[in-house]
Amino acid sequence: MLSSSVAQYAAQYGRTPHLAVIIAGDDEGSKSYVRAKARASAETGIRNTTIELPATVSQQELCDLVQSLNADDDVDGILVQLPLPEHIDSCAVISSVALEKDVDGFHPLNVAALWQKRPCTPPCTPRGIIRLLDAAGVEIEGKRAVVVGRSNIVGMPMSKMLLDRNATVTTAHSRTKDLGAITSEAEILVVAAGSPHLIKADMVRDGAVVIDVGVNRTPDGHLCGDVDFDAVAAKASVITPVPGGVGPMTICSLMENTVECYLKRMNNVAGK
Ligand code: NAD
Image (cartoon, rainbow, N blue to C red; front, top):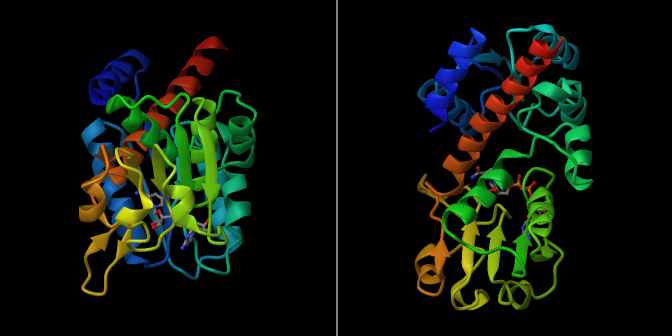
């Protein structure tokens, strides 16, 4: 359990890991993600400071805040909740986070390290999915994997991490022709499109492992994934529900990334 390791580290190093989360604006979805991260931190024994800013915050104010957290020796991880208000250059803000505190794994140098197969902080959602596949005993090596979606946050790093585990990977996206023909070949299918019930049973191979990353809100306010769960579950060997599948694994990975950033910092201090 991560919480017992955190307690041991806190006793050993004399301080607990500390995650700072910045949220700008009033997006309800983002607020609920930030609350879930604070809850998970409390359960794990990680100190959490959530800083709420108005949607009108300026780029300079946001970057100044990040700089002050970068310089704060008591902060181990900095997470800037996305999306940021439209007038903010998200890329510039993410790049301003100190590399050693980039618990989201979105800093350009972390991304580069992932693509060059060097040590890095991996992005939370793909990391959580790999852990989920391993925990379910799914053999990845040699499998035909299809990832639907090519975002920097999920689709692209997911494809790369499956490739690094020796799957044969196809990345599908919004311009892919005949998506069903591609997804039907997948032994491992990861769907991160943000399109409710995009994947129907006839698009899935018998016995496939189906990982649904999508989080969509139906008109009646319920959450649903990108996969038509009931119909696809009848064909899949493994399938993740929404909610309750990939989401909790993403948060679990965030906790792991925070503890790993903390340990690297603590060991650097000890080595000086
Ligand atoms: P995004 O909008 O940045 O990217 C979506 C990708 O899907 C794009 O690359 C696009 O080409 C592709 N796509 C869209 N419609 C498609 C279609 N009809 N056919 C094929 N490809 C299509 O989104 P994102 O940030 O990657 O997130 C994707 C989904 O995953 C969203 O629902 C998001 O809320 C969810 N998400 C969940 C978690 C979690 O922890 N559960 C984490 C991150 C994102």
